[in-house]
Amino acid sequence: MDRNEIEIRQHIGKIVEGIEAKDFDTLRRLYASDVVSFDVEPPLEHVGVEAKVRNWTNVFTIFQEATYELRELTVTVGGDVAFAHGFGRLSGTLRDGTTTNGMWVRATYGLRKTAEGWLIAHDQASVPFDIRTGRGVTDLEP
Image (cartoon, rainbow, N blue to C red; front, side, top):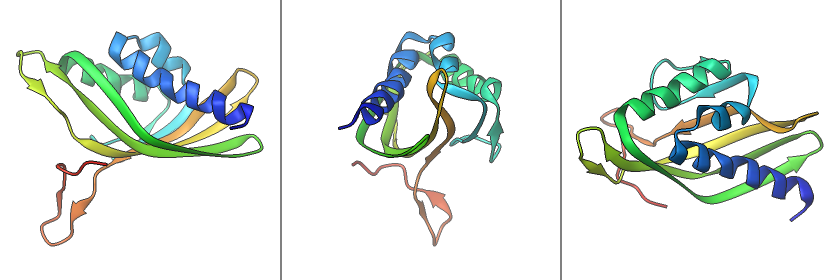
């Protein structure tokens, strides 16, 4: 692994830390100010770091305690841009005390290197769907 890949893996790893600590400042610092996010909840596109932070606000409103797991992360670096992909799962205890194992999503990150280091400029979380029914398939595991 080269230095850039190590830095990117550490950077993406801070998503786990930020979610589990419910730390908006840590999460905010991971993203470019103009990040474009294709998250699992509507609308189709969330633009800007504040929109991304609102997504995490929604998560923290639903979860009393949240855990995020990332598996099989693959990183490709080319100069000042990089992309990474893997599988992510948000789970934990909901506000009503219910424990949930969550669901696995496909996670993709587009990053660019800035004076501050690597920042996430694009991310996407998605689930596969059953083409016959149009419904998401949320019981798959990596």
